[in-house]
Length: 111
Length: 281
Image (cartoon, rainbow over all chains, first blue to last red; front, side):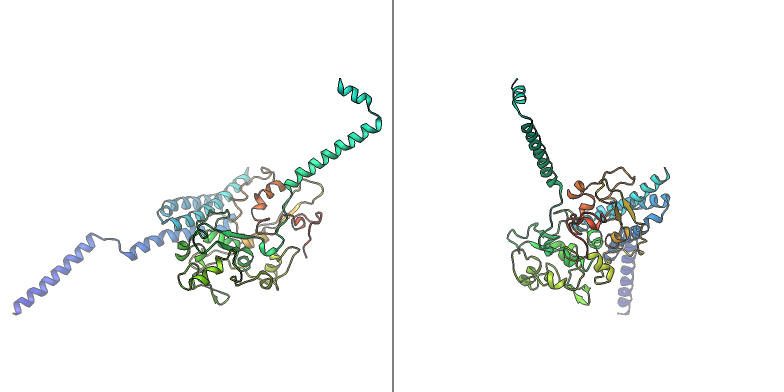
């Protein structure tokens, strides 16, 4: 009787260990992880496009870097659902457009 | 030749009369063609100015077309908030608003979600299933009477007036309205805008003075990205010949003025001491 209980406990521990090992080897994306992935592009978008008010204070190099970051966001926004994509593509286009506009005007000033 | 015979047969005063008539015809022709390029008068009622009828699919077996009043919304929110952060296009039918997108918190539903507050009151939910007919009619109001909550006259009674409706610039300056420029969960937190310097735009005609353009006044409502680069794309001075013809056609200043911002035929608001169509109070 006692032996059976020990075997059952050992089997349970063994199964739990196997599940744990497979969870480590094969991490399937859970909902919170997916949400975190979504948030990553959103955070970058917020970070990049929060500077439009200060666009005129940036150097041409800083503006060029911001434009690059905008371009890097594009493929991620293209993966969103239609409505979200349309809204954020529009916002990104305006944000990038402004940086490019200011960069262009700064370059023209130098000429 | 017949021409010669006519000429030779004419008396001197008949020739003069013909000349005057010809000049008259030419003058009338010029006036008529110029009329085409004069800004059209805004609607008789300022409440109709900036009114947008949204009818992507609503009137086809649905609750009817939506009547959107710019005057109501611009008293509460900046142009930038709606046209940049929320994503309302400035061209007709370019936004893609549907009941579904509203329900999902986009477009009208970005504010009208039944949760967000404005002035301490909950903003009613758009396209929600609850309380259907009555609530739908509040926006889907084309051709319906007594369904709108706000009436222009009573709503704007305490706001400063210009010659044509509310003087929004004065209303904002005086603090009578405080347009919101940030929407939690939608807008990006930004530093306050350091206003660019004002400048003048040279008028091409001697009968109007140069335009005094105020970056400050415009940036209060628009930030930078509403105007640049979409509406004003050039970065080199003198490369675009701005003209009233283009403005009237809806380009440059005419992208907003003549549609929502004060009408283009209010000349003095841009050209100081211009011939008076209307003066600001």
